[in-house]
Length: 600
Image 1 (cartoon, rainbow, N blue to C red):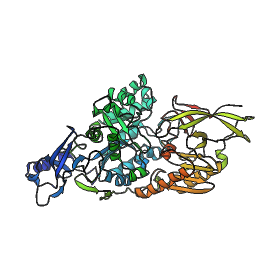
Image 2: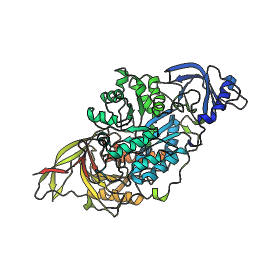
Image 3: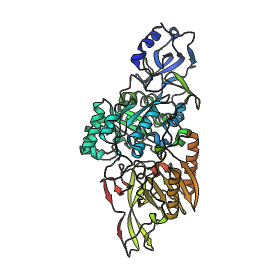
Image 4: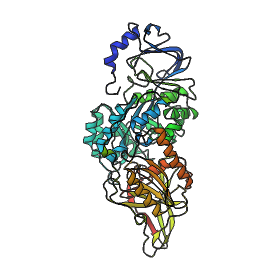
């Protein structure tokens, strides 16, 4: 059953009415549970839920009048009945999985609705890639709504993508059955400056009556922020402190607080509710980016809700922020987000609201998971060869491609260096004095080399720079074709020979992540689809990803979830300093800056 053919409420209304009135038997009844009502923020003991044609027909103290000979009875035994969890903003590609395998991984964690922005694949394959993600999403047994990507490239003029998303593309996609709105509007200077292309995309979305996603990655909460809000974005997940959350909700936006694999922005913002006492209706929980290891070992939206509770949030409020608040924001409160008549029957049974063990998951009226086991099929799209052949470097690279020449006669140089910030998306713009040997600038100490290898058009172009914070030691290199958002290839290393080996290896396997040390490959994660995803099961991908992270640790990296930091070093819409295929970008000014400032 897909979203496209899932019975709408008007089509099933007569059936649901008859079941609620007792004139027709329910398909399923959950009996003797505690009804968590997210509309009223109550936990009501001794209630039943009657389900028919995949939707809720009746909720009350006694649903026996809905029972028939073929009705499936599920005994809740006093457990809490809560709505299926919703992830309000996330990128499936960040899990290194296709939509089918991502769904299979998160269903046992109680996620039954996701609002996905496939702008990663949009940068590699354009509108056709978005359609592939959209179509596989519609094939799944849970609700995967697609937001049409808005910014490819994310910062025009500062990077080159494989494809460009146009306002015409956005207008076309608004007619697709699974499109719920516009993906995060990352070009916030463009919106604040009334860029015609950005405004055309927003207008096409609003004309379709759909939601415009936001992304305001700037600490400036003055006129530039007001201009951005006036432009139409309705939510934002880039807040990192209490002031950010408050500013957004005061201006009528929804503050999306994220807990992903590397982003820990809930604790610093939730005090707006727990401390300042603001109305929680405008606050929403999301993940943004979760890699496969997090999904397999730690959870998904259940992990986010537990974390919010651990941060002092009332469990019922935390559940609201992961259910009804999300549904309301996207105009789907009559479809999902609560256990009330007419809604899709997405139900979780749990024995404790604080620790939130996910014991039984029902989606669209079918049992889809019990314990840690997914019980349903998650169909795969037939990904074409064009989606599996996307690493086009144009030529084999050598160590010479990664050498950084020094100014003639220099003994030392002052270099602009990207500074990694642990557990946060922003970086720091740092400067280090680096030595010169035989006419080449030498990384050393806490500074490594970083290179951006063009992989879409076969130009053979390599941009070199420096990065600090990984702590790598010895002769090593790590390369990845996951390089948000343009998704060229990022190579970080301490040795030019190893950097060339790593880059060429990914060309040979069609994309992924690899680590080399002293000429030997320590780890490899194959990501053959767009160089971003694998269609293998999540546990297999997670095992390879864990081996990759272990190899990073073996090479001296002590950062938590350092791979996510690596993959974001080309994200030219989040301050302060990034690398692109066109040069080193100061995102505070959206300007290119020189790699070397001065020399002695």
